Structure formats: structure tokens, C-alpha cells
Length: 335
Image 1 (spheres, rainbow, N blue to C red):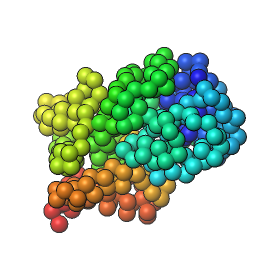
Image 2: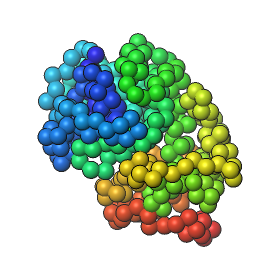
Image 3: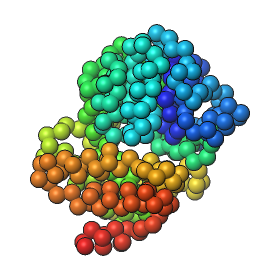
């Protein structure tokens, strides 16, 4: 089996890098010229919780540069707002009905992929990772990675890919209910906006009493909406659903610890969007999802509405992370 990783950023870089380090045949597709040049010249610098590694990689900028094979498996690891264009490019590059694995945040990428590919699978990724400089990807956490066929089931391709991933440093599990797991992960992502707005690292936010209570309120709002909408969600094995995270955040004795090494501090995806000044963020696929569902089912969503509005304003203005503090967010919520 060969792995085509569409997007060599924070998630794609870790997944593809781990597969390549384990001896698998991997090809990256990426559009960032400086990142591609660094990968070609120096290899992928994979750093973080599993040590520092330099991994020679094969990278192209267009899917059409690849001679696709029947044993290829595609990982989609681009931002959600790029999924349609990426799937269209992949579909134009090959007529083979290859299995595609959506490893992004959000719950709409699989639907997009299904308009182009017949064999769609989901990957629920709870590792922390970041790509802040060309050629370098840092894994800051080692949470579980779930693999399953979308919307439910467990195909042979999903089993084969999970087996390959199980040969890496990543903690892998399989599920026949991947859609439920990705809805739970979407709830986890609701505070990516909080970290982008405040500039806090993920561990810093969990260690700050005021931030913890805010994040618990945001999670609770999201879960309330999904329950009203009749959408089922569940967490990975041994971790439980979002309600467990809410209880943890409201526990006054909870102490997650904050790394002294800045490189190991987790940076949420929306924080990274602001840091790179991309001009857009994925907030519509996280908090925006909750706002839309809340509107449909008459459930108020004040926290998510505020977060999606503020982070989109910052992104459009290309402002860097950290414009607001928690007190300002609370005050704005009351306005």
C-alpha cells in the first residue's frame, strides 16, 4: 500500500511523516512553495513528543504529477474550505476508485469527498500538532487516532490503513461509528477559536481557571445543540464523550501541567490560521456548525456566535493571535 497525503501541514505532516518513518511509501501533495522547497531540500523535520527526526520525503505540488496505483490510499489533510478543490484535483488526476481518508477537523469533509469518491473513510485525530515554519512539523500531544468507514462500518481498506498506522508511534483504534467520533471531535474544536482570540496555548488554557470555565461553557453549549438536533456523538475508547472534558475543566483540582519548552506547547488550528495570516479560518466548520444547528432547533448559541464572529473578523483583518483576554470575551458576551 502506498499513501498519498494531500496537505503536508500540521496533521498531514505528522501522519505522513510517521508512516514514512515506519518504512511506508508516502507521497505528499502541498501548495505552499516555501514548505515544499524546504521538504525537498532538507526533508521533513518531524519533532515533538516522539523525538526529533529528519525524514526524506517525496513531495509534489499537483496531484497530476503522481502516477496513481490501485494500491494507493489517499489522506485528505487540507483545511475544510479547501476540501472541494483538493478532491476535484485528485479526481481529475486519476480514474481509479481509491479509498480516501478524511483526517481533518469538522464533520463536512467526508460529505464533500463522497461527491468525488465512492470509498470514503473518516479519521478522528486527537493528537496535537503544529506547522509554524517551512519543513518543520511538531507533534505536541499523543491523543488517539480513530479510523473507520464513513458514515459507519469498517471496510477492508480502513482496516489495512489502521494496521499501517498501528506500526507508527501514533495510538490507533478502529470504530464502525466514525461519524459519531468526528462529531465529538468537532465539539472539542469549539474552543480553537478561544485560543486564537486569546493567544493561549492549549495547555495554558486548560491550566487557567478563568479560561477553563469559559471553555466548559462553550463545550456545554455545543453539546446542548447536538442533543437537541438528535445528533449522536461519542469519544474515543478510554476517553469518554465531551461531558467528561467539561467535568474535568470545572474541577478546581485539575492540573494539566504546562510544558516549559515552548515547542511542545499545543497551538489550536485557528490559532495557526491567525499566526500564518491566511485571511480565513475554519470557524464556520466548528462554531458556525453549532450556530446553524442551534438556529434550526431553537437553541441559543451566544458563546459560539460570539467566537465565530470575532475570529472571522480577526482573520479577515490578518490580525495575529491574542487580541482579546477572557474578561473581554465575558464582557462582550453580556453586550
